Amino acid sequence: MTALAAPTPSPIYQQHAIEKRAASIQDIASVGYATTNGGTTGGKGGKTVKVSTLKDLAAAVKGDDAAIVLITGPIKGSGDNVKVGSNKSVIGQNSKAVLENFTITVKGVKNVILRNFAVKKVVGGDAIAIQKAQNVWVDHLDLSSDRDHSKDYYDGLLDITHAADFVTVTNTFLHDHWKASLIGHSDSNGAEDKGHLTVTYAYNHLKNLNSRGPSFRFGTGHFFNNYYDSVSDGVNTRQGAQLLVQNNVFVNSKKALYSTDAGYAVESGNEFGGAKNEAKEGKMAKAPYAVSNLLAAEKVKDAIALTDLENNVPDLKSSLRPLQFVSAREIEVGHGRKAIVIFVPVPLLQGWHKAQQRLTRELEKKFSDRHVLIVASRRILPRPKRSNRSRTSQTQKRPQSRTLTAVHDAILSDLVYPVEIVGKRLRTKEDGSKVLKVVLDEKERGGVDYRLDTYSEVYKRLTGKGVNFEFPQAATEY
Image (cartoon, rainbow, N blue to C red; front, side, top):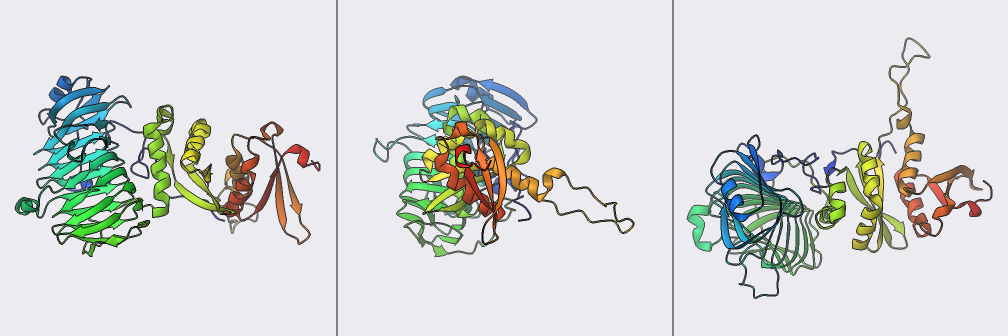
């Protein structure tokens, strides 16, 4: 093993992988179509305004001057329509930013960012309506209604229509709704929509939806690393739409990817569950922008789970927001069981440790058959080369922390954290193979016994070396 892993870190506030954070109200779009056509900067550089009422929100988002509008608390309407002007960032300051029963409309404007707030139960309109607008980034929104009413009681959660262009939707939770998202609103609107409706959907979680995940007409779309959970009808490509659909996961879907009215798609790397690809073969083989972090489908669920915890477990939100992870990996640990190993940057390990016990407990509730472990991503450096001028001088020095022994010791400590290691001994077996015996703090006996086999197997998979974990009474040779 020369290294654990060293890809670019992926933000938790993502998740599964957007831009380097800590989050800032000055953030700009860094994924998808919103990065094209000059990019999407929203209100960056403009004044910052805090609002807590519907009236103040409507006033703050008017006009085309750059502004960052921070929503500081819940706001309730009665079917109102708040129209956002150009060059605006509308951002929820915290989890209290919940908008109820009014529409946020981005119409005929450009350069808008909507982030970090919830919109729920909008009667008489969409939750978010984007029409004839350019360069819009929708990120970390929570959009929902309910399915207690009839399917036509609410309109859409997120509708992108009337030739809107250069739109990216990331890290957004669309859930508990009948007809979720339209891209292109009518079969008869081709004269306006053809050549437009360029949209990216990435790292989103769609759950408990009947249809329109989304329904996509006429335009060009890129869908990657989205997680569909109990979405009856997923991506519907229609009316000549050309889609690139990559590395998404569908669970409990009747129709995952399909086409009506001559829509097309190129798909790769998706997990369709019990469904299948029913779309006609398309021509969009490549996105017109770089994709810096395309997760394999098997990693999507784990990354979405971390984002969901940040969004839905308030006491974890502040701990997780500044953190990043490098990758998440499932490892077979025997007897049909798996462990999820989250690799994190070394400088952020202490921050992960602060949240680790609560975080792993919540994740293991989601993945009832898996243990969750957090390991820092460390690189082992080779032995330095000796200089030709001297047998003793060296051209470079290798930090002690980057030796193979140091990295393997650090992995042991990471795997068992917060349990303390109180002893180690390398034993040679009769067949000549070696196994490391690690003694854990006696006071943890009974609390982590059920995890010891997982620790051993994960260590072996990461290092190629065997290890047995024990408690003092069982290790009398110490």
